[in-house]
Length: 353
Image (cartoon, rainbow, N blue to C red; front, side, top):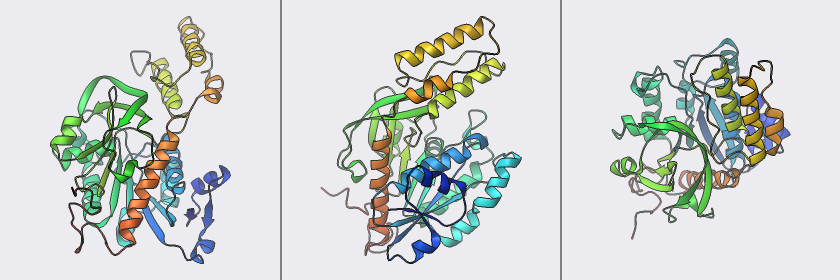
C-alpha cells in the first residue's frame, strides 16, 4: 500500500515520478486503512543523505501489507553536516524528541561514515545508544543497516566488529540458511546482496550473541539476522536498499579520491558487479589517466545504462515480509512483543517445536 506524503519532503515527489503510489495527507486521512508509522534514522553523510531517503522510502512503499505508511526521517545533531544538508534536515526532518513523543511502529537505522576504528569514539555513539535503548522497549521492530548492526552488536551484545584485510565490496551470492523464518518467506533460496564495508561481524559472533542467522554468503559473510525473539531487531550487514548505480557512484568517489591524492592506491572495482565491456572501459580510463590524460572525464555515462540490478526484488520481498510482521503484531490482539499476553522471547511463535 502507499506511502503518505505527510510533509513536502522532495523524496516523495521523486518517488511519485518513478511510479510509486504516494498519497497526499488529505486523501489518506479519508481512507479506512490502518496506518503504520516507520521512523528512518538517517546517519549517512551529506552526499548520500537524500539518496538513502529514497532507497528506504521506496522499499517501504513497495511492500504489500494493508496499511498506509507514514515515514518519519530524523537524524542525530552530533553528526557533522554542511550548510545545505543542515537546511534540508531543519526543513524536512523531525527531531528524536518529536519521534519519541509520537511513537513508532517500526524503525530503520542506516549506516554512517566513521573516522577511525573504534565505534565508541564516534560523536554519534551515545545518542545512537539512546535511540536504540528507546526502540528496544517501545518499537515493535527495528531494522539496522550495516554500521548500525555493528554498533548494536558491540554495545548490546559485546561483539566488536573485526577489520578485514580487504574491503568487502560488490554484489555477492548468498543462501537462505533458516527458511522457517517468515522474513524469508517466498524468496529464492539463493540471492544476491550488495556489500560495502571494511569490517565484519562473523557468524560465530552472531551465534555467540544468541542471534538468529537467516542469510549468509561464503565470501561476504552474514547478511541477515534477527534478535533471539525473531522480530524486535533485524540486522543487515549488506545494502539491499542500494540503487543499481550505488556501487558505481562509490567506485567513482574512490577514484576521484585517489586522483586528488587522498588515498595511496587506485581502488579495485566492486566484485561481481560490472560486465566485461564495462570493466574494459574502466581499465582503459585508469590506463589513460596514468599516462597523463588529466582532463579525462570519468566514463559514468558509458557504464550506468548497462548495469544490472540482481538484488532489488529480493530486498523488496524481505522488507515487505518485515512490514507484514510489524503489522501483524501491532494491529492484532497480540499487542507489542514486550507487553503482557505475549512471550517476549517468542512473539511470533517461531521458537516452538
